[in-house]
Length: 186
Ligand SMILES: CC(C)(COP(=O)(O)OP(=O)(O)OC[C@H]1O[C@@H](n2cnc3c(N)ncnc32)[C@H](O)[C@@H]1OP(=O)(O)O)[C@@H](O)C(=O)NCCC(=O)NCCS
Image 1 (cartoon, helix red, strand yellow):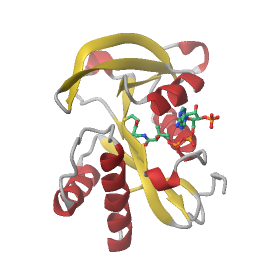
Image 2 (cartoon, protein in one colour):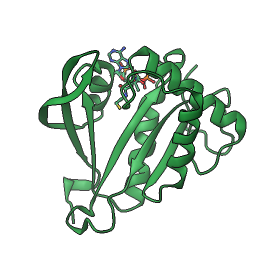
Image 3 (tube, helix red, strand yellow):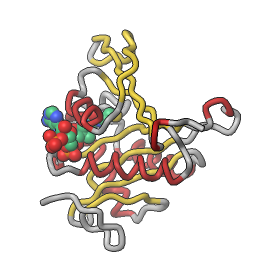
Image 4 (cartoon, helix red, strand yellow):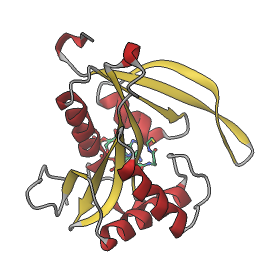
């Protein structure tokens, strides 16, 4: 299997989604559950339960600043990422968006879907006029770090007390990527 850029017929690939069918929401929660059990990376350390996950993803669709992108295999959702725009009051950082909560379920990894998901979010941010994409990740998320560094994300800092997992403090790594030619921000 290889990830394609299919958008018209979403069987394999990545697309932005603005509403779920029951099956899509079920698959997304299943994928998130599996990713959290495997070591997470997007906030939860222990699975919060199906009801909480459903409410969470329904809520994401309602937040005006958030856009949800999903990855599919054989038409079924296996992962997602969020493009988060700055709030309107943040005029000083109006040029920068955030890539958050990206994951692919363990059973769908290694086929290029996260790379495609990241590319789609970048394209979405660029199309909305953003000049910079920011993201941060736990230092222990080695696959994610390899992915983002291979895609040109620039490491600008390390937070020494970023997360607590299993009673252990974990550092966080912060990245940005210029989205426009020449890296200009205005
Ligand atoms: C990080 C993650 C999204 C990668 O998903 P994926 O679909 O398997 O990734 P891809 O197949 O698109 O791989 C793209 C690149 O990621 C890196 N990568 C992926 N899996 C890797 C692994 N196990 N070890 C090292 N690098 C890895 C590689 O650079 C790879 O490029 P390559 O195939 O040319 O070597 C997935 O492992 C995941 O969901 N992890 C937990 C959540 C997380 O860390 N999210 C990110 C921060 S919130």
